[in-house]
Image (cartoon, rainbow, N blue to C red; front, side, top):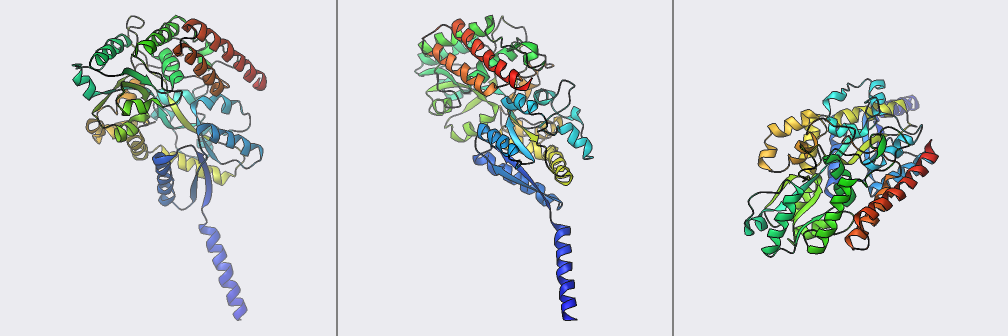
Length: 433
């Protein structure tokens, strides 16, 4: 009798345990520091909101390290359900036949409400198919803007932030006359000064709609506009209007120290600047060349999106879909946007943030959103979809550095970058055709 009772208790406990065991969903990401802590907070909030699923965020290092780890794990059949991949990895993810579970398909097959029109088109366009279907879920999207030191501007008698590159030059010279070492520096030079320069002026960076039209695309960023801009920056490097700081966001140090009074950087750099700058600063849109375009177009995004990988159970995918729906909630998106400086991905999150008075209380934080939603995206401003893009950016960095050092002229450098970049595109095409 006692044995029967004990067995009943054990069976009952086992059934209760299995009934309440949440299905685990693993999410690999590249968010370190404060943003990584926020990612953990978002996952915990989702887990606490229901008891069917448990999202487990795992930090895997840099964007490149995270993507490389996911590819290796997939080959070993140990892949996570969700992986965060930076925007330059989009073409590689799309080419991974049988590896991805398109988000639009996942949401439909999981029975989750999903209306693609509620997302900001300038953000989602980067991650959609040729039919306009979302392949991955935008998570942390940013766009380049111009930060400026209001204190140094005031000291130099400058009352307005520059809107054009011509004004950047004249403003920088006034600043230098007042004792400032350099006019401006930059982060992510390829992204800001070639990729977004091209989008801002509605000129192609590559053929076939910047790569959206297929694998046979060729680079075209050695055109008159891009050459003229790089040539001018080479001149500015010599006279101190511009000061090169490195390939990533190393320029932040020169801006924080007030060595440089202006800084072209990601809109997501706002939080870091607010935390580190010991001066009053402003944010304005990325400049454009007056006379080259009547009305500047939208810039394109950086950052990353969340890709769903094949090889998991239906129950796990229901958990993934539920989590992606949660991530898209206006309250969750508005909180992430306001905390990190990344763009909101939905119209509702943007409206909520505005209604909460965040933009009024934090001047400049709306700049990236306004700039991204300028006009209707065109084939030249929707984004870039290029294979081996990480390596292509490395080539561009090398060639731009040869201009900044005065070793070659702008036309030669960009011609060489295009030639070397096209060789990488052909390599990608052969591997994925």
